[in-house]
Image (cartoon, rainbow, N blue to C red; front, side):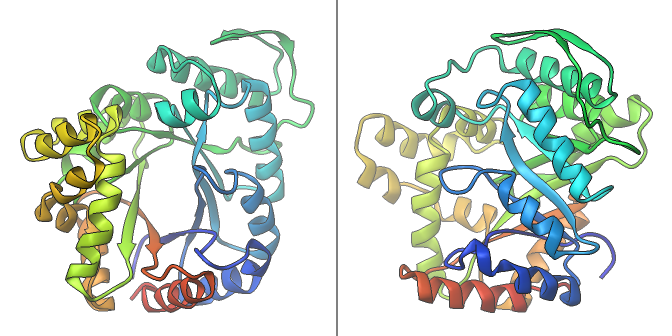
Length: 333
C-alpha cells in the first residue's frame, strides 16, 4: 500500500483515555493519519493533544474546527499549540460547519460563509508568521494581536472543508488541502479535480484532498441500508448537504425524502431514501470489499482517505468490540 490511509478517532465505544495503545498499534498496522471530528461529542483539538504524545510518526488532523464557534485568535493559538506538540505532523482543518451546529447549538448567525472563511484564512496566515495582526474577521475586530509562540519552523498545514465549487476553488487557492465527505468514489474526480485545478493555478503541485469515508461495520446489506437511511435522512436534508448532492446530480432522487422531511414526516423520509444513495456513499461488506471501495476513492483522486467506523451495536461495550475489530481488519494492504 502506497500513500495515506487514515482513521477517525476516538473509536466509538472506546474511552478516549484508552486510545494510547490503539494509536501505537495503528502505526504498526500501517495507518498514516489520525483525524478528529467535532460535532456533538469531543472537540476537535483535545484528542489531538493526547495523540501527539502517543504517536511518533502519525499525521494528525482535525476535520473540522468551525470558524464561527471560536474567535480567530483562539483558533490561531490552539493550532499553534498542537503544531508545537507534533512539529510537522499537524493539519488544521477548518470549515463553516452547518446551521444546526452554528446557529441552533451556539446561537451564532451563519452569515457570509465565503467571506468568513477567506478572512479567517488570512488571519491565521498572518498570526502564524509572528507578525502583529490588525484585521476584522466577522464580529471580531482584532487590533494588534501577536502570537507569542508562533510556529518555529513552519505553520500547520491548513485544510479547508469544501463541498461545492466556490469553496473547493478557495481550498485550492488558499489551502494546503481540501476536506470533503458524503461522496461516492464516482463523485471524487469532480470534487477533487476542481480543488486541484485551483491549486495548480496557484502553483501548488502537492495539494492533498482528504475525504471522510463512512464504513458501516456489517456484511448484512439490509442492516447497512437501515443505518445508512437514518444517516442520509438526517444529513442530506440539511440545506448545505442537500444543495451539495443536487450539484452532484442526486437532487431528483432525493427530492421525495427532502419533501417528507420538510413536512415533518421523519419516518416517511427515512423510508424514501434511495437504496442506491446508501450504496454510493457508504462502505459496508466484507473487509476486502470495504478496502476495495476505499481504494476506489484513492484511485479517483482522494489522496487521504479518512475511515470513519460506524458500529451496528448500541451498547458501548459491543460498540468498542466492533470498532476494534474493524480497526484491525481495515488496516492498509
